[in-house]
Amino acid sequence: MMTAGPIWALGAMSGTSLDGVDTACVLTDGVTITAFGESGYRPYSADEQSVLRAALGSWPEAELTAARDVVFRAHLEAMSAYDGVALAGFHGQTLAHDPRGRGTHQLGSGDDLAEALGCDVVWDFRSADV
Image (cartoon, rainbow, N blue to C red; front, side):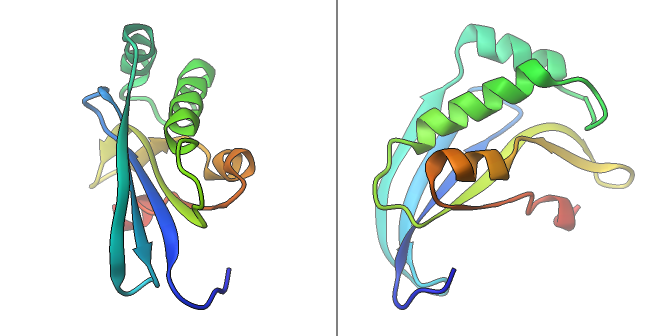
């Protein structure tokens, strides 16, 4: 994606607290933030928290269909609230973290979100840092 000038970029974050999905927008050219946009929060329901809590500690080879569906639906709902976004960043839902061993497991698919949102999604950027 090559554009001249700043674009609206959306970020989404959810963590092992399992409280929900935080979102925020910035207007940026990739170097300088020109403006801060809206931010939001989409809480996980008690049922969603239960599904995710049951998946904590799991690695990619585990069967995680229900948890994957929760992560996708919650993030899509939170991220769909923004208009004019050209790029999104998706952290994924942390399920397991072993920096001296297996690395980190961030559940979710940026490809699926990109298709649903209709914009490019940068994702799985944490794995390279662990």
